[in-house]
Amino acid sequence: LRTGSRMPEHDSFGPGARVRVDGLSQRADLNGQEAEVLHWIRSTGRWAIRLESGEGVRVRPINLTLRLPAPGAPQPLEDEDEPIVLQRDDGTAMMVYPERCKRRFNET
Image (cartoon, rainbow, N blue to C red; front, side):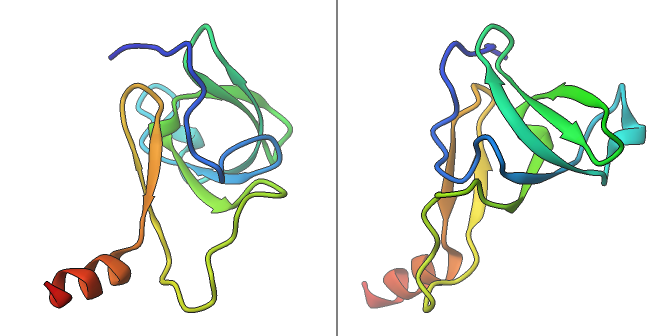
């Protein structure tokens, strides 16, 4: 695992996004809790988030599931399916639209 100096390239993550914490082992008590994204911590490659309880924690991108995009983030068009967010260990992420991929695959 390489902790990154770069912020993840995911337009929907960012200050103000709503996320759910998943897959933590050391702080399993936080799994399933919702939080607000505060900012990216470049030195550790983690997002600073604030849980609904008010507790602030630092979490790797792979342990966050997007619930509501950051204000101003691009929204999918009405005819698009729900994206799946794929996150890498280096903190980068991308959105994949399964139905769109399936349609394009069937066209070839």
